[in-house]
Amino acid sequence: MSLYFAAGSPTTEMSAEELRANLFSALDALGQKNKVLAVPPDFTRFHSKAGVITELAWQYYGDQMTDVLPALGTHKGMTDAEIATMFGETPREIFRVHDWRNDVVTLGEVPGEFLYEVSEGKVDYGWPAQVNKLLRDGGHDLILSIGQVVPHEVVGMANYNKNIFVGTGGSIGIHRSHFLGAVYGMERMMGRADTPVRKVLNYASDHFAKELPIIYVQTVVGKNAEGKLVLRGLYIGDDVECFELAAALALKVNFQMLDREIHKAVVFLDPHEFRSTWLGNKSVYRTRMALADDAELIVLAPAVHEFGEDSAIDVLIRKYGYCGTPKTLEYVKEDPALAGNLSAAAHLIHGSSEGRFTIRYCPGHLTREEIEGVHFEYGDLAEYTAKYNPETLKDGWNTVDGEEIFYISNPGLGLWAYSGRFKD
Image (cartoon, rainbow, N blue to C red; front, side):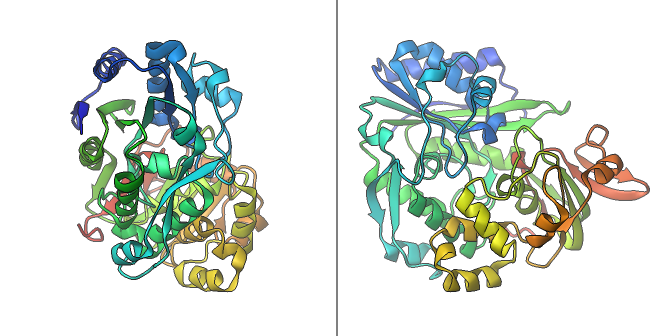
């Protein structure tokens, strides 16, 4: 197994020129390739630098890069405007849309006994290793899996083979992996590279995906002292080593350990990135380990207009709401529709405070009735934005009208925890 490039530190600021040179040197080491597929994230991971890297790969390979398949998972397909913004000059005609319900093939199945063991007896179902059929049947001699390693609620640390088996995966695999993470406990996993879900994905890689010519291009992104997003690390390889190196750096770059609990947090959801609570609830689970009991989480969500990005899942969220673990597990037993959409059930758990703190959503395009119908508190966006102005607040501790608040400008970039609550 090979590591083609590895560099980064908590203070690294890799320039555009250095990124290009480092990527091209790694691609040089791979030798001649005749048909290349790039698998970057979609627009919900705009800040990952994956769009720039995909465009650079296209510049390197030219016509040999025949396909770009954004790893949508359950998200909606990208618009032309999003593709142009994220991927620059990469030709629009080589982009493909992943259909997670219909476009997949199964490479093999991780046995239920393995899931029972890694989940400590919480689930015992098998897990199908599913990918978009283009990965298996497209005839490519190189698949570039591109993305950012950052703390994640389902798998612990995002990316590596999650980009393949979930990002281009099918409904059963996505549902069951999300549910496994939820019932095991996301607070036991977030920020960790070795988790039950990762063990399942690694089993699938080791047993079923060795014939796929995958090279992983992993980034670590953070903010510098001026608040600008910078590339802290770049790791390129064909096995778990590049992921583990990136995850170790991401823990230092993206995980903020606080010496006191947060009693009031204000989180801003960038309208270009967050249009649903399915994505916007990063505001909930990325902060939950830092929030005190009876704290208030205020979510400024100017572009949020729906709950689920998938219409069937949106219906289920509206039906049950963010009701916490015990109720969700009850509903899974009672409702075949929810049992058949376990990623939705997992999301209901992820988006709940389990009754421990208040979640006040201030949406741009949902009504009070809709917000309260899913068990959130409602906040008027204009009123709360006037008081907690994203244009003037700085990331971290602020004082507003004599009250201390903790402000987060993008919950997708990190994980926050109180040292007294987080147990390593």
